Length: 499
Image 1 (tube, rainbow, N blue to C red):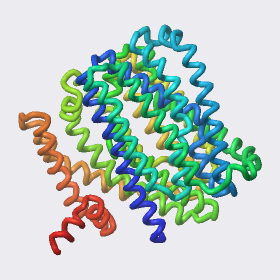
Image 2 (image 1 turned 60 degrees about the horizontal axis):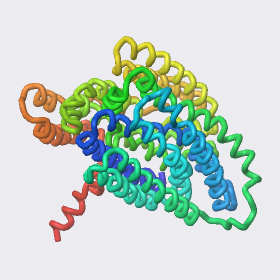
Image 3 (image 1 turned 120 degrees about the vertical axis):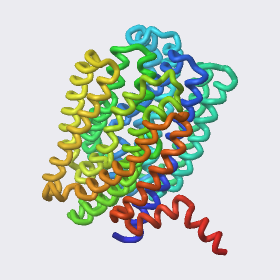
Image 4 (image 1 turned 180 degrees about the vertical axis):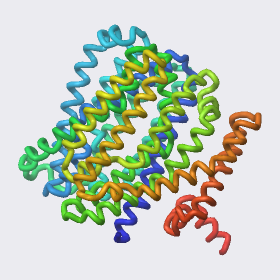
């Protein structure tokens, strides 16, 4: 692999992962504050509104973000292409706004019958309109090799989000004040992201239109959009079932148990976005060997973080949940532990492989099967096991989707099943991760200390054990060690000490 390719996979991936992680930490910190300032019904209403924003905007974009990666290298007037994409998303956002604005009373009566949800639904249409076109912002900038700008805006908007959400809470303005703060953040994002995306793209808005690529783009986006839509419901059906079968407080418990983990929840998505343009290029030139090498490298890098995180979080699940959200959310612990089994199945984004090969129809069939399976199991299990049921159904669905994706890619790339994944490396890494957790497991179950102290003791012990064991077993190579030294600041400290 060339140095430039290596930089894209390692440095750019780490940079974007770090900034995406900051966004996740902001959400986590905001939740930690919100549970202490809002009642459970108000907090549940806040979570429900933001869940609806994410679901509906994903439906509206309908595969548009991923299509940007495919078409940006193929169009002459990129700025015109981006402008047309933004225009389409604005129209869709406006339609959603009108439907929600005039239907909010009916929606609240049918689903919630909650006064605070009615207030939230009044803001929901605005949120969707202002955020819909921002969905392609990252795709546009990464296609222009402008990952640093993506990282910078992620940091700025993370800080802004924290300020506009927590300030109303500190001032005693309650949930209504939080909704107004979020509204302000979306207005700023709408203006800034649209301007930056167009400014960073080559072309002239007064020149030729992109009508020559529009039919091809629609043909590409339709199956991709259906895949995204089905995938969205596959990943969200558990929360939808909780919404339909349980109350707003149960939704709050479930959502906190199924929370995103900083770094882990964004890592594979970020790495996948960085390598996507290269995967497209390799497949286009029938370079399957380099295609697999790059994909395997990304899987290994992600797994080095995901596998040990899975084991440590499982061991310290109760301490983490109750420390963050107080003892009131202890019922979320079992949901959190159940959901953790999704992590080892999330070390890569299979959709990137299908999209790079322009075989999105394969993924569509599998996603439809998974959403039907998840819906059936979630309804069945929520009646039998309560809120833990949909969590278990989600894990079963993700395992089925993982298996079917591996089999499909084996035929698309025409390689043997044993060569699809770095199976030996992953098995060895999981074993090292489990062994590293023996001492922290004993500490958690044998020593009676506060949650904070247990976490402060167990985390460095686990981290040190993991590093020593993986180094001893030759899991991490010199390149990994140099990356750790560089991005943890250890290299800089050593340099300063030697001066």
